[in-house]
Structure formats: structure tokens, C-alpha cells
Image (tube, rainbow, N blue to C red; front, top):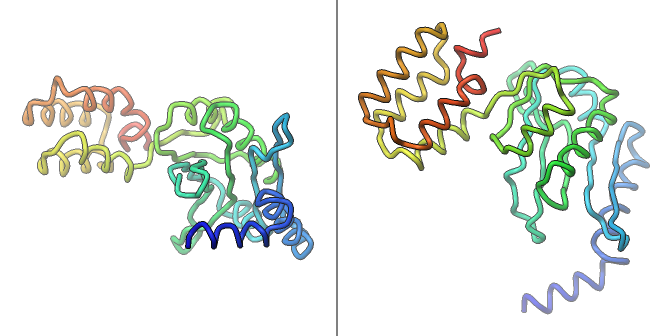
Length: 224
């Protein structure tokens, strides 16, 4: 049954699904003068990277684009390709979408193309801060394309990783406090060392690695 339905869908998509997607975006551009779309093709003329945003997204970024959230953890489509969503928060605390992209893979070249294309769409307006899930290649691309932006790791991803790596409710509560606590660097240092000693985590590799990245997630290092 699934094979039959898939075949029926393919017959209705003229020129392949990539062409159908691009045709759809062209149709959107015809109804929205501020719509922006761009893609890259392989040597075999196959769709590789794709970015798009509409007029509302571009206006929202102009107003609320000082902090940009950049996440590519949504590998849920049929091609298992990264769907990247650029988002932020408006003056009502609501999530707003600034743009979307599909990438051929998660390498630094694809990330750089996506960030540079995003800047092109937004009139070269750079964000003040960028929040990501901690991907190393993404971090390097951000340094190259947004050299003056403060890069911060997503607290939600950090806490989720902590739940997986350290199965101790006391540590999780203390770690969450250290993420958000408005304290000095010296106070943070004392509390961290006390926490690690109390839960006997000095040899835990994830805890050690997370501490080395503290300037990317602890409010004590990001208060400016």
C-alpha cells in the first residue's frame, strides 16, 4: 500500500520533488515581493542546499534579530537531511521564524553557505548574539561569518545532555542553577568546584568538557 501511494505521489510531482519544491517557492515569491530564496546545485544538476524566507520573516529579523537561534537537530524528513531553522523572540516573548534551510550535509562548507545566504537575505545585518546546540562545525562557521557575535550554547540542549551523561537529580538541579545564576566568575568557580566534589564527578569526561566551555553557557561569563 505504501509503495502504491508513493508511486502515485511521484507521478503527480512533475519533474521530481526538488523541482516541485523550487516551483512552489517561485510561486510564493510571485505573491510576496519580499520573499527570498536561494539554492545550490551539484555537478549532476541535483539540488544540494536550499534557503528561503518570506517577507514577514525578514521584517521580524529587522525588528528582533539581535539574538539569533540556529538549530539543525531536526533530521526528520524522508531524505534524513538537516533542516535548519533560524528563529528568535519578539517583544511578546513569542517565537518568530527568520528563515529555513535544507542542507546536503552538516559540514562547515554547507553551514558557511547557509549563514552567508542568511546575511544576504537580511541586508547584511549581523546578530549581536547567536544561540546554538553546540555542534563544533557550526561553531566554526559562526566564528567565520559572524565574527563579532557572542556565541552561546542552548541551555535546553545542555540540560538534556546532562540528564543523559550524569544521572543524578541533585547534580542536575545544581547545574541548572549555575547556568542561570547571576553571579561573579569567582563565585561561579567556587560553586562549580564544590558541586563536582560533592557528587564525585572530577573524572567524568562530560563534566570536564562542559566546564572547559563554561564561557559559552554560564551567565557568570555572559553578563555583558
